[in-house]
Image (cartoon, rainbow, N blue to C red):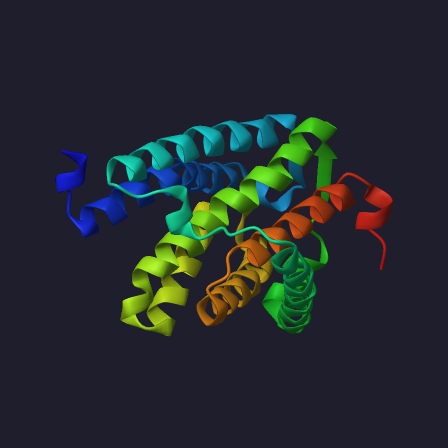
Length: 230
C-alpha cells in the first residue's frame, strides 16, 4: 500500500510527520504569548523545552525512515555522506553562516521598529548538559536531512528559487515557537544552507555547521555573562 502512494502524497505525508506537530505547537505558543503579553518577557529555555525536541525528532525520524524504507528508499537517499573533508567544509560553512546572521542583525537593528525589539530580548536558561548535547547533535541532523536532503532535493526540478524557498519556508514553519525575533537568524541561515546545498549537493557540511551553531548558542545562553557581552 505504501509503495502505491504517489510522489506528491509521499512528500506531504513526510512533511506532516516531520513538521505537523512543531507547526501546530508553534502557532499555539505564539497565540498564548500574544494573549498573555508574554512575548515581551524573557525567552525561557530549560530541560522542559529541550527534551521534547529530542524525543519528538527521534520518534518522527524513526517513523520517516520506516516510511521511506516501505517506499523502497534508504537513509542514503538523503545523501548525508560523512567524511573528514566534508567536516572541514562544515567549519567553513559555519563561519559563513555566522557572517550572514551578523549582517542580517546589523541590517535589522538599523530599522526603527525592529531595532527596538532586537535590542532587548532577554534569555533565561536552565538546562542540563545531556539535553543540550543531544539537541545540538540530533536537531541539526533531523532538520537538514528533511529541509535539504528531502524537501530541497525533491523540489530541485522546479528551479533554484522554488527549491531553496520551499526548504526555507519549511524551516520557518518548524521554528515558529522561537518568535518573530528569531527570523533575523533563521532566514539568512536557511538561505546560506540552501544555496550551499543547491550548488554542491553536500549535506554533511551543513549538518556540521548547524550543530556548531546549535551547541555554541546553547552554551552562550546558559552563561549570562557571555550572552550580555558586547
